[in-house]
Image 1 (cartoon, rainbow, N blue to C red):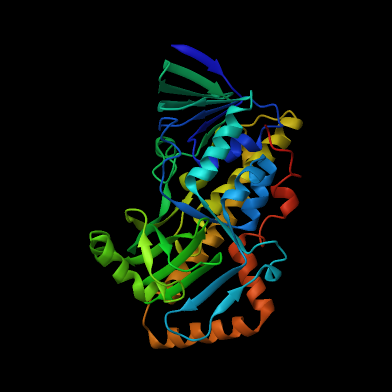
Image 2: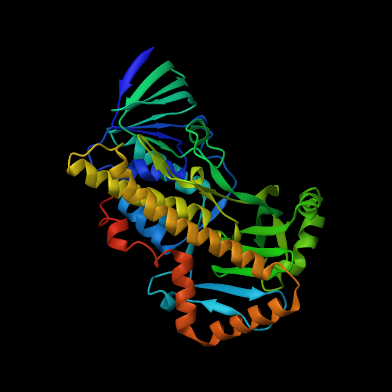
Length: 408
């Protein structure tokens, strides 16, 4: 068995894990990234994500923003509405003081850019098609035994970061418990092409059985995010393409004309999950391994990106001070703050979904009064947008460094 030593082992080579690895590129730390999928498959995920301006600033810091910006959409407007209620909220860049309200990027665009950035860094080693068999935690280091294409390897480092998803094996093997529940809803995603230009305007429209979002993409494509009760969602994705488009008509609206289905609709259950702690000696949790929220308002990946940015800052600072990266006194700086901020956002998405996904008349009257107030009162609209984009939390200068030039 080959034995290799690193300063950090990241289990999970998805977007949050690679964001952390690339965020440490100026620290001099030797980083190992372990990804279960093969390298030629890891980009192949038919999904798109809403990215907040704060996530864009993180990607500027890790050096990929100039590469991805031409291939993603930049929203000049985000429109929020409640079913057929006439009053709508329209978020604009001036509400936030940023060039765009939000962005939308396909998974393959972000993943490929991060993977390229990691491969160009001599301090980062990525093991693809590799699976962690066991992780043990000692007084001075942790050891991970992995099954890779090169054979069985024993990797050691002062710290292991679990970025291996909501069903994280590393988290489960470490005995870290979670709280949460499954919703009565499932999420449908699909790519469509409208007949008329979407003008890069995003929509989120709330219906009694769940929200419906339209995320514009380049080349006049959109990703829809359709929340519906479980059985209804299963029935919808089983429809022939023309019937699926017809069923989507009421929720999508008439503003873009007819639509063409570009991908097979995918469905997954909505759930909320939060780990009871984000760290313990020699281990830290990152992204979906630490938390998972309802798809409403597109918060999931953004939370993971902010996790990665803060952990990179904490570990870089500890390295400069020659501190033990796996010591709980170091990890506490990351875990306590991120757990609280993520808890606030999980609570926000839960309340938002429950407030709008019902037909109780007093709640309908209250939420529509709030919508009308927000539409006409810009300070309240700005507060809402700062909450949704993450600017309410950790100060920007503590979350990201000044951007550096992209690697060639």
